[in-house]
Image 1 (cartoon, rainbow, N blue to C red):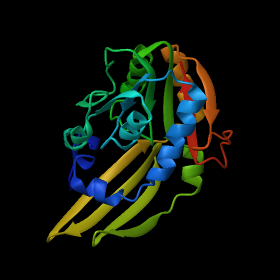
Image 2: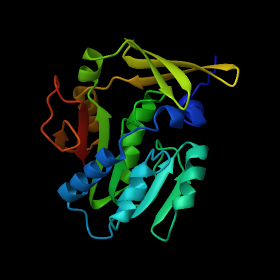
Image 3: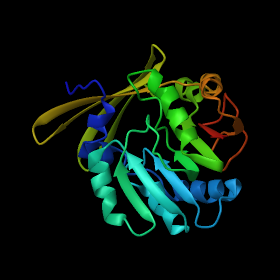
Image 4: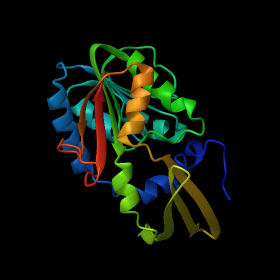
Length: 242
């Protein structure tokens, strides 16, 4: 069993993570960035920090819209991959999002449920405080999280996904406040097992964290087209704060 006290530094660092999720919808992600940046009315050539940027798909697209973008992620492999796309206004670096970046931005984005993975509960509050510290006077923080209520109600307990001739056997369950995904597969004669654990934060949980951080929640949306949030039917929980 592959195990680490901070599992996200290992599973996210494997090539298998990117194989399993390679079919993620880029057009949906790009439409979301179009709508979000338009809604926030960010300044032309404004500066954006993409926290937990992975291999940089959102950051690269945001940069193509004319923004100066820094993509930051804990995964060294992902950042090494993303660096090939760097230019004068697009940079990537390894960074722990629990800590302030020590630069101020027009917007800090944390997209695609890249929150709530921490072993240490304190790191959730530290991340929100770090985002706030990285915002300039007119800047906005955005956390795009899953709608935990909806996800728990619609969990698919077991499925097999075949990608690049690898059969990923996936089990999902809710336990002790976490949505857990067990992933098992064989490749080249080896058996691998990984686990994703995400804290099933609700809007109320986030509001408590925002209150502690002294952050002001401005808007809440339930999908990538920025429709109103409904805790029973929305797939996403998108929060805009400052």
